[in-house]
Length: 347
Image (cartoon, rainbow, N blue to C red; front, top):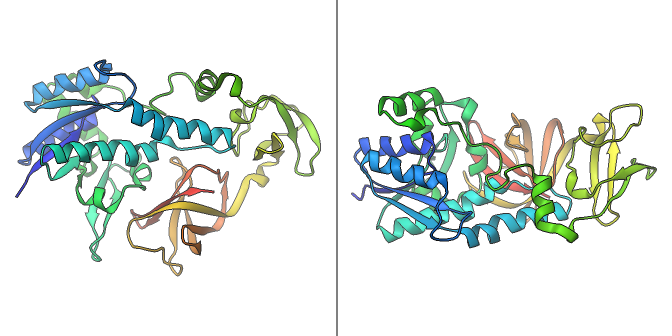
């Protein structure tokens, strides 16, 4: 049996311990770092750390430069979504279109059967033969949501050994090996944004940055001026810089009119959404008779919902109770118990 595995090495504690665990389980481990923000031969600090870690673990290490692909498949769509009044989740698409595709291509080069990452999740095979992603032992660190666009081919060849552990246990394993990475802080937010996304969009768009426009109420009444639609997202309250005598929230972004519609908190609750770009995981279709748990953003705990097919690539998701701030551009992930059933993009 081929037990060679290519492990995505970020220089962090999770991917480090993932590589170690697989080596201990008898796999031939090859570490690979994806350099997505620098031109060859430049290497970021995380890449240099990953190289040193692989030396300590006694495994080979390779760096692949993916700046152009990352720019085309992740950064450019991220910017375009904001220009269309949507709020994207670049990590979901990066996992599918960059990380997994790159790792699997490298696996092919090395004749490796598997790829692996340090994600807090578990890949299992269902009774129907399909593969899905299930919650990790560490519920607080669970990362299944950002993996909901992985294909059956990708999942069938993916290992996630960290998913069987709590975060504290992973750090303890790294410490027992004498690795400095044991106490390294977890990475946060979008990897290609150093400051905040407003500054990033301004630096990239320049004169193409959307102009100021009107804040309006639901009935069209103009109540103030906004600083450009890319500065706002559904449900936002802070940073509006407008005084109406009561708290108001972004209810909708009208790109054609260049308006940001404001309303009360109750106005940002919805009982349904429509999503497309579906990736079916647990089955080829969603079961319209089943109640799923739907997550509309990474931090959302999830709400019970039902699915209704509208067209070949569209489903309406009806929630049993209203959910707050359904946001176009964000990912909706549906769960059957602790396991992913499907993932789509809110339309």
